[in-house]
Amino acid sequence: MPNKNQLCLSANFLVIQFSNVKLIRLSTQLITLCFFVFLFGCSNETDQIYEKTTQKSFQDVLQDAEFAITENNFRITNRLHIGKAIQERGNTDFPQNEIILFCNLEIAEDMLKIEPRYINYCPYKITVTDSGGTVTIGTRLLPYITDNPEMDNISKYINTILNSMVEYAASEDPFILDDN
Image (tube, rainbow, N blue to C red; front, top):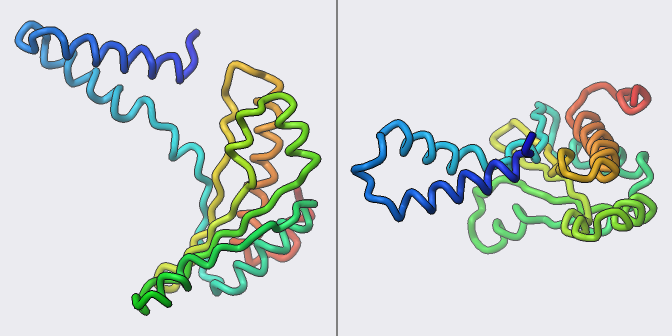
């Protein structure tokens, strides 16, 4: 069975090929189907973002995210104060937004031995956004359905850790990390 990437390539090829044929000859249903496959079938970006919302304060979520990162043996490498920087440029109503970048060199080494292109996922990041009293915390997950089962296993392992960090930062339960 072809994987999602192979199906996307096939759908894109069909759309390109159909663009060379007079549209009058094609049925409306076929054109519509190709259009939707082209637009929606190839995007897996929503599958790669894991988010939670909370009523906790922005600062509490940041603090809990940092705690979860360090408790999982990752090192914070940088913090990007996006919201603050935009506010300083004159847009004082802009919401608070931060990105915490972090890495674990042992996990990175294991991952990059198997798939060097996954350097594009390093460092990992957690985002925290304040949207009028609701704080959203999220992370970008690694693809875990590929042609490489060994990489899929590492991706699932890393994604589990990333999910647990987001869950902890969004949760009111201070012992949620103990469950993972």
